[in-house]
Image (tube, rainbow, N blue to C red; front, side):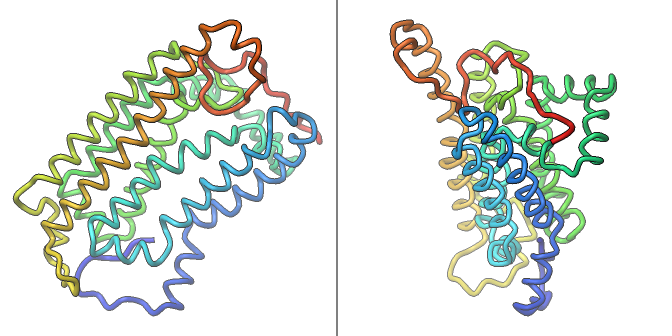
Amino acid sequence: MSHPVGPVPPAGPEASLLLWVLEPAVVASVLAAGLYLRGWTILSRRMPERFATSRLVAIMTGLAAVILALSPPLAVLASVLLRAHMIQHLLLMMVVPPLLWMGAPVAPMLLGLPRPIRRWVALVLASPAGRRLARVLANPAMSGAAFFVAFWTWHVPALYDLALHSDFWHHVEHACLFATAVLFWRPVILPWPAQSAWPRWAMIPYLVLADLQNSVLAAVLTFSDRVIYAAYEAVSRSQGISALEDQAIAGVIMWVPGSLALLLPVLWIVATAMGAREPDLMRAAPHRDWQFEPRGADREAPSVPVHE
């Protein structure tokens, strides 16, 4: 949910709550939670090691973070404070997508669909066009480029201010940032039954380059001596903080939590890759079916029946 920037009287609490409940992303999150829970309940009985409770916790936390990012308090603050808007973007780009992939959502979501819809979706996914599209979207070069383009496009001052003044363009902005972030995080998390198109070590420069672009924009926001997004200068402020100070705080928020979200997976990948070189430890360690697989995804195909 977004609100135009400027001297527009805010909606009452009842109206804000109704708009939030009817927000398409909120409705979609609630439906996705129900579908996943239905499919996970079945798969956790058939494949308990593959679909442990940790999967359910991860994806439900991710969907809850979507609802939090679009909640009325944060949405209203985002219309007048850049730092609040930055928190929204961090949730939608750095927190929600990896949590969703940690839930290995493909099989549970497919199995959670009603049977006629499931058949249709399975046919589409198995079609030549569906397979070609899946290969393109799964290519890390494409997902990394899409993430880069969306990130810089929507932080161009003219487009950023446009999104602040228009509900429609604000929804488009969030949809673009979220969709490209989902694609970006897929090869990093590599959720079962995905297979990596690149060697596992290639995710290290992939993440480092993403952090570099994040740090560049964060530094610009933090150290700029002028307000970059003019819409925030037009906002009346009851707090004793200027638009320039708000911008600097937003830059720090982007810099520190954003870099942690991108670089901690690098440390995990390095640690798991080094651990894989110790055969004795690998034989002694119990199987851990979790997010960051050191050498690609499992080679087995998913067993998701069309009939329950």
